[in-house]
Length: 56
Image: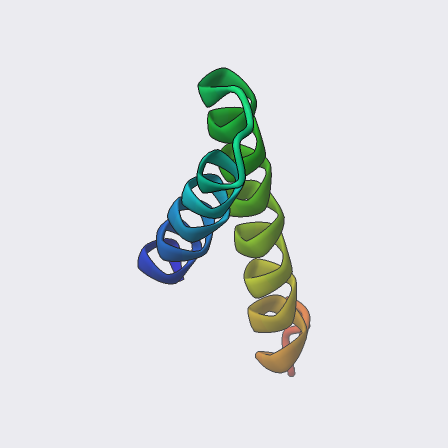
């Protein structure tokens, strides 16, 4: 999950920088894409595995 999120963040940052954006803004956008992707994947994992419910 972390590797995929890192790849998504890197691609988002590189695409933003290649479009002529400020390098600092591109890093910020890449970091935001990384965080959003990781949170989404963690939420999917949490609910797909039962959401922390324990079966007695």
